[in-house]
Amino acid sequence: MQDKRSNLFFLVLILLTILLFITDILLGPVKISIADFFNTTSPSNTISSILFELRLTKAITAIAAGAGLSISGLLLQTLFKNPLAGPYTLGVTSGASLGAAIAFMSGFYFSNTYLQTISVFALSGIGSFGVLLLIAFISSRIKNIVIILIVGLLLGHLLGALESLLQFFSRPEQLQSFAIWGMGSFSQTSLSQSIWMLLIIIILFFSSLFFSKPLNSLLLGHEKALLIGTNTKKVQNLIIAIAGIIATLITALCGPIAFIGFIAPHIARWLFKTYNHKTLLHASFFIGCVLALFCDIISQNLFSSLLIPVNIIASIIGAPIIIWIIVKRISI
Image (cartoon, rainbow, N blue to C red):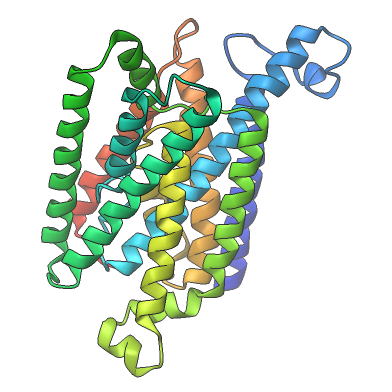
């Protein structure tokens, strides 16, 4: 009975992902019909250009970012045994964002495209991995999940203050580039970058599936996981590596995206009524896709002449859910 229910939910999520993917491509300031979608060579080169160079690229990026953030959120919530953990709430996104800010404000960013990409990725990576290792160190000494969350939030504020300081001393052209990036968008990538991003996220997703059983054992607690033969140190290092790569990749290419990585695992547990990570990883993957595509569709269609930053839509949806989880005191 449970298997039939799970299969039905997976079928619905897959169909919803496909439906929203097509909707995201068709809807926007320039309306494109289904006939244009299947016959892109006849209407005009403009329609074809909008479809492949803008809409398709953006929809693929949304899928990659939503799935990646959700997997990262699930892994971090399991590692820290904290239902409020996520790349955004623990300050990991802020660390990557500060690294990107340093790249934007440095002379490297405006020297050439190659150095621009390398500097944003390298410094975002240093920022996200630095915060992850610091949170892991603190959580090994403090077991209270609320204190860990407060530390993560304070760390995010501290890094945000340093980011603001950099902006204060930056030149107008540097500030403009960083402000656009900081609003969060799925439309800042090329088609090749989007495809590579999706492939990397899929590889990391299957890598996570390989240690779904050790992830289940972590829910029993560190000591009990050791007793049943789980190499907790190895699992912890793998989670930090995967979460760090995902935070770096998505923040560098899309800017900071709030809340999707946090709420998708909760929706997965609520829908599938399980703590089995084999199921939760699959469910979080597709729920993340649905949330990211939905936010992107709203952001570009809420006002006909204005494109609302994705981060604003994600925050409006995500913040009430965080409040609901705190009030209900959902445990993991």
